Image (cartoon, rainbow, N blue to C red):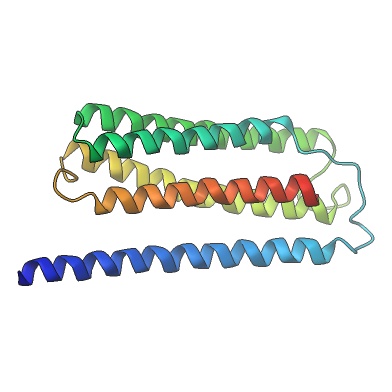
Length: 191
């Protein structure tokens, strides 16, 4: 009984740590998108700029990655084959890599349009897009590391009796997906 209480307290502490981490990430992006809106009054803001199609494709890919992780989580909770859970999590990991590749292709298209991060050929608008997207990619790399840990633990049967680690990892991944949807919508509608 005492061991059960300790496990419940540890689980609660881990959930709170994840929540605080997600809140700090949210505040970072909220601050940057607020600065984006405030900066729209600058004289160097105006420009003809369209989001590259790769950002649209990557949005579809990130949504698909959430779906594959949901399938993996469902299979884990219903006691399906560990190989099936692993394969769906691996599919999520691969889609995360595809997302990052599409983002960099999109950045190359922005550069091809003549807009750079900084310098005479840039505008403050593109600088914000670079910073926000790159910061999201950094967090997504952390999410990929989380997926690697999840896959390792799946193979070691660590989630047979306790899915907490898997649930926390998948919550972080879904948060990153939601964060990209927010950023993409922000760029599309307020850009």
